[in-house]
Image (cartoon, rainbow, N blue to C red):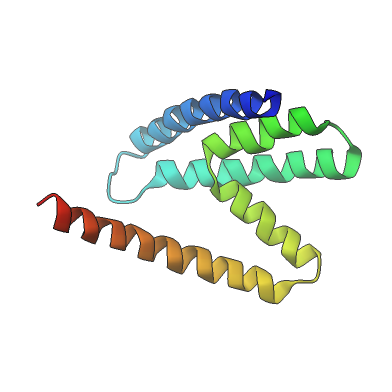
Amino acid sequence: MRMILLVGLGGAAGSMLRYWLGGLVQDRMGTAAFPTGTLAVNVVGCLAIGVLAYLIDSRGAAGPELRALLMIGVLGGFTTFSAFGNETLNLIRDGEAALAGTNVVASVALGLGAVWLGRVVAHAVWR
């Protein structure tokens, strides 16, 4: 139960940070045509998870609770794209390039397909 609470608290903090940073970047860029705020959040999240993964995995810089709070909670609330990037890179590092490629293609294709399907279903149900 303690781990769940840590992840939840971290997730709340990460979500608030995502809302703040994404909005700040989007406003500063002055265009709604391209999602610069989301791009910035995804890149910052990937950079952060790379640093944390190295420090935790290679240096033992944190135990399971702090790892759950930061990597699953804060960064999970901030952007799940960072988890996707880290897991894909781990597959490549482990010599599983085909699985890494499959993860990239499947995540993008299935994610876009699911968004499209959700819109179609919602339109059909709530027109």
